[in-house]
Image (tube, rainbow, N blue to C red; front, side, top):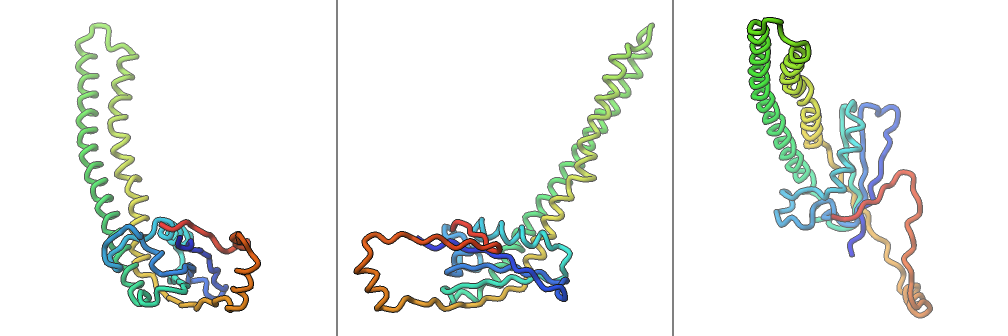
Length: 225
């Protein structure tokens, strides 16, 4: 069973306040990507937990001028030089998808606004016609109902056009900045257990139990994809 990627936050020093750094620790660099994706390494989707961690950490540092991603691994050195273009390709694709969703939402908002204007004009016209046809005038209940219907028909389309695009725009900008993040890969060699110690443990232990990870305030462990 592959080890779980351990994600840790790096807090930059005060003099580097214009830069934000996020550190990720994995056993193998391939763990950063979806193992079920059969695409080439540079075209794979990120592992969902790794992507969520990266996006959450950097979204909290939007004001930083520079973003750095430090990846610490002990295996997969042959993938190190492909990690930067792989992340760039992935987040460029995500930014393009977010831009398409934003454009589609604005288009639907415009169509909804046309429909809302039509309902608004029909409601106002019906209100005036019914008021002229009725000898006693239009009842207050019906009059207020037509007014409410007219404004409700405009409320949702206007909200979509004025405010609805903002979350998608912010998401697209996040993906665009993540596509330009500076990636540094640091390979950390593993330290195998000495043979004599391993042999002694094999002779004395019947059913060794996995020791829990020591608690850490700056490390977050996620399951593999």
